[in-house]
Image 1 (cartoon, rainbow over the protein chains, first blue to last red):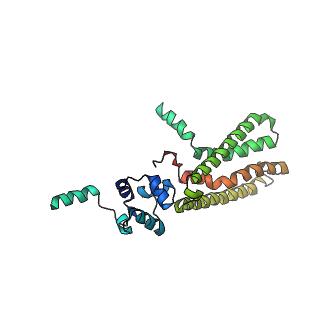
Image 2: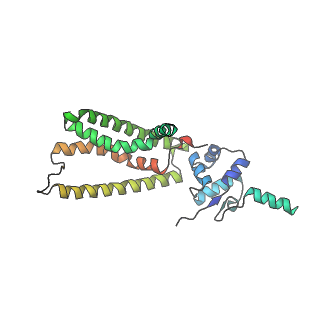
Length: 83
Length: 153
């Protein structure tokens, strides 16, 4: 059984206005691999995961999780309700 | 009409050319090598389609690797290639088994099934097989992982 690894690569990439090619060049993989990662079709090795996290300057667990991430809209809505 | 046109676009995909290459080369080369004049147009067509399929498969394999930085395959590409090679050679093993089974039936005296017996018949299988074998993993990889032409980068 394959365990699915969820990630926020697309979110961080969009926030930093990086194209898939920019990120692929930074972590030395094929741009298509970034697409596969973002769609959840491929789970990266520990090395690649750490390289991507280092590129975004965040901790690995902020980028990858075995549980689905909460959507940004939900987080913002909750933060708005808390105010 | 639209679906017909889109099916034509799909046929231009290298994945179909790879599949087409295998029977085309075997039939085309077999007919021409055995001087079967009655089937010459079929042989020439088969050989032409087979060679187009051969170069399309080489082109797609080159295209797949060319996009990689430093011309090296990354971990996902290596995984795809390993899976493709594994499927391709497992398929080949099954095919060889089927040929052996067919051969054991076809060569029994009470049956008159065709089976390569003369050296020229065997030779006509060697050349297309030698062309197809190295490209088998590339053909399977094209089905496991479509070309990145339409990938948004």
